[in-house]
Length: 127
Image (cartoon, rainbow, N blue to C red; front, side, top):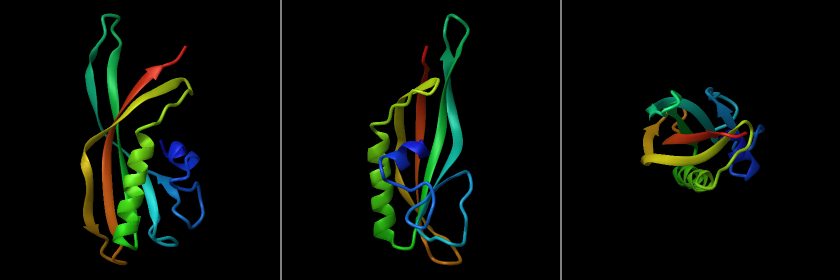
């Protein structure tokens, strides 16, 4: 998911212009940043073959010095994720926004705005 957001230009793999991180968000060095976290998924049942259907959960958190820039970046990321497909053992068949995008406040130290969006993924094995 993070790789897709980098490949379409929404975020950067590194640097100081909107980098994206996985499961860790540095406090210092950059104000405008995104982070992808694993969250609660959904076990959707079992096929007749015995295979369980699981939809992993993912949270995208955006932190920004400016409220409007952060909201715009989160909105752009949600739009980019609506068109994602992958072929690397797994096909990411669908990314579903769970609920709505949210402003969750500001961090206590540097007054940066925080936004989140939660997603459920539908994965399919490729031959």
